[in-house]
Amino acid sequence: MGIVNVTPDSFSDGGKFHDTGRAVQHALQLIEDGADILDIGGESTRPGATPVSLEDELARVIPVIQALSKVTSVPLSIDTYKSEVMHAAIAAGADIVNDVRALQEDGALEIVANSNVGVCLMHMQGMPQTMQLAPHYADVVKEVGSFLMSRLHAALAQGISKERILLDPGFGFGKTTAHNIALIQHLDQLVALGQPLLVGLSRKAVLGKLVGGDEQQRLHAGLAASVISVIKGAKIVRVHDVKATVDALKVVSAVMPTN
Ligand code: PT1
Image: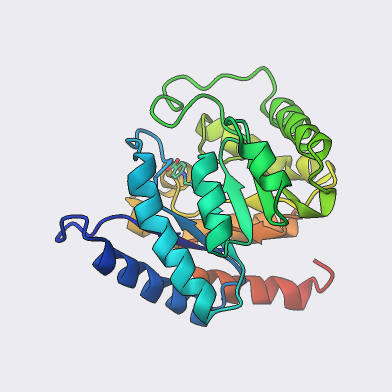
């Protein structure tokens, strides 16, 4: 899964047309690089990020989804927790809803249930602005697992069939380095929940903790993280560096063909 961030160009005044074009160009490059899914997002959920209004988020992502759905059959995922954005994105051609709040916002379960799109249910402790201040768990693997099971059951109860549902431990979302590492170490316990697992570690702070350096210097650490995750059973990795990740995973597939 290749990441397509739709955020205003620092040189433009949030002029939609220019930003749409850049995002579409980037998405097409990721397809060329071997992405099987594109994840399109208009609001950052990284620690400390400031929220984006509904109007701005719609103006950023909907034109990109409309444009891409006309030119590619690669599945498009919308990275949002807002039910109005889910609704508009599905109408514009999105195939997957990727929700860091696991369909807990009002109306979100219903909108996904009344469509035929896939959905990724992610775990987060707290909210992006404050989630890294004091993450706390008695047993992070158990607690993430039971949260994901409860959201899985909420989705099933709403009529979303299990074939449509992905689960995600939410690396970096209200987790210390030790919590993130424990989740990778015990990923098999989350695979055992029975749904395909999506994992996002690309360029995240936990990698910086392990190797030092800024975001641009985390590629090799991220490749190791993707390889380990896939060997441990993850089905989808959400990454910025698609070509490098595809190459690394080709080696995994050659050596472990059933993986
Ligand atoms: C993710 C994910 C996501 N991550 C899914 N969607 C982000 N399903 C956005 C840091 O610690 O893992 N899974 N959508 C990006 N969020 C973060 C979080 C970025 C933490 C950076 C960090 O550096």
